[in-house]
Amino acid sequence: MNHESASEEMKSLWQSQPTDQPKIRPEDFRRKLDKFERRIFWRNAREYAAGVVVIAGFGYYGWKLSGLLVHVGAGLIIAGTLIVMYELHRRGSVRSAPADLGLSTCIEFHRKSLERQRDALWTVWTWYLLPFVPGLVVFEIGSAMMQWKAHPVGLGHLVTRFLISGGTIAVVFFGVWLLNQWAAGKLQKRIDELTALVRGPD
Amino acid sequence: MASREDLYEEAVREHGPALDRLARAYEMDAEARRDLLQEIHLGLWRSLDGFDARCSLRTWIYRVAHNVAASHVDADRRAKARQLVSIDDVDVTDDRTDAAAAAGRTIALERLMALIRELKPLDRQVVLLFLEGVDAGGIAEVTGLSPGNVATKIHRIKNILIRRFQAGGEHES
Image (cartoon, rainbow over all chains, first blue to last red; front, side):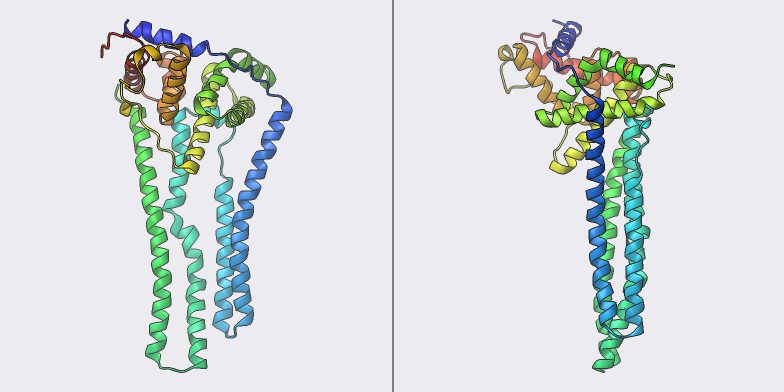
């Protein structure tokens, strides 16, 4: 048996499988769309819930603690959280138009999706981390000054405390940034592989 | 230009069984398969408003179906952290069962399905289009692969089919 007859036999076996005649009615489309909308709603709800927790936490601190810098810092963190929530919502809403499914080849479609994910990860510093920085810096300075006022222990101690807490936050931010760059690099490799498949060999 | 309803009706009439086979090849679980098939039909229905006959309706249908199915697999893979393989890494021969058993149609089909479900989306698309009888040019048009890559992959697929699924095959390479 040669390649041709073997593959023809497999094609015929494949195509002769019993299939269910699809009975998709308009109600099914509506149900499917409803399910899709519900999924988006709950995904958004989870994102907003996390944001609301941060806003409530810093709102409470801003109200409870005294000191102008603490109030300003908490306000800036809340503003930063709102920016991040808006960005998450905006980026989550970017989807392909329905016609893209048929206009794009499988590689183009997949590549566009990977590029969207890669760009979000590559720019994570600007839209996910940076909005928190001003608020955290001001809040940290404010709470250190407040503590110093209550228990004056010397400038060296104050600076050390600020460096430890600020340094911890910086390390966490750097770690998040690094992980995202690493993930974006992996996506870029997959994008390059797809590009190579379009180009050759011919 | 035909209306969306007419195009959809034609798509289901001409390619409905192929879409069903495609969903089977992507999803083993019956409920998830029904869900995927509905997603494909929904994607097709919504997309047909933008169909401008720049490619054939068949190419359009296969693009929509494979794009929807690949997104489905991608989301599923992220959820289950499942590792998919390239067709280049699939063993041409398979010692798991003997060739005589593989000659049975049901077993051959089951094994073929299992093989397809292990493949990365692009390789899966090529195998499925090949099995549906789409020629190399058509496969290139649907997937976006270069003709050279399509030819290489088809050669590889034929090798796998003859070695894995044909009892007493001549094992040519």
